[in-house]
Image 1 (cartoon, rainbow, N blue to C red):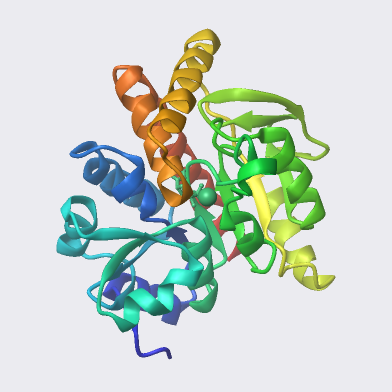
Image 2 (tube, rainbow, N blue to C red):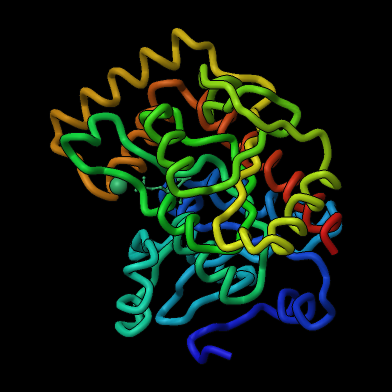
Amino acid sequence: MISAIKYSPEVAQAIKAGNPIVALESTIISHGLPRPSNLEVARQCEEIVREGGAVPATIALLDGKILIGLETQELEAIANRDDIAKASIRDLAIIISQNKSAATTVAATAHIAAVAGIKIFATGGLGGVHRGASESFDESADLTALSQLDMTVVCAGVKSILDVHATLERLETLSIGLVGYKTNSFPGFYLTDSGFSLEHRVESATEIAKIIKTRTDIATQFKSLIVANPVVVEMPRARHDEILASGLERAQQEGIDGKAVTPFLLEHFHKASNGESLKINTEIIKSNCALAAEIAVALS
Ligand code: PSU
Ligand code: MN
């Protein structure tokens, strides 16, 4: 047991009993969604996982502790406090040692979940290779993290603000598994179809559970599996492309770089679309939580 970890009673009980658990990230709460929707959506996500028969384990760092499962006030703190940093794997030990607080990205959340033996994780859209990465070298640590962890991540593809083609190439190089849930097209976060096709398609949670077990049988489990679950009602494409173009331009003008890029562009989308992207983002996360719970149950 790592001393910096604090489990919520609900998660501790589920681990002890071997009940299905779904890990949830917190960067989406503190940096991906605006207040006050962020707290509301975080609560709804946890409820959806419970309704699906699994226990939600939202992961974050609060005042120097790793929390696996957030209690009411802890979730409120992550959603509302102004001192919540965005932590990737490399930041974890530093933030814990300095008794600080941070939300965890997909990379950091997956790492902590794996330490706790949790194998299923739901998020919105993965990080990936940013546009212009051949110059900026901006590639999310989500990719390298997932190439080293025994994790199954349910997401709506990678965020459409990224270079999707380059990201798919990197996923292949890193040997990260990729299946489309009831689709042959790689989803594009706000868009149902990113324009790239998928080699593998699955129809059910049971099928995914079988793949997860087989990965362990043949020792490929330490390179994550991505389950790409497309959003049902997408954003009108012309509007999407227009908002993305203006967001990228603003980011460049304002010199936004590093870990600030993704939150900046997401916020730009939420503002410029008058809340439409927020609605879609919320649907994406909820749907991924429901599917992740189904997979966790099928696996147990
Ligand atoms: N998906 C969302 N909203 C988000 C993120 C994902 O719908 O805010 C976050 C995740 O935590 C992901 C991070 O790990 O964005 C990627 O950030 P970066 O591009 O800086 O690696
Ligand atoms: Mn980056």
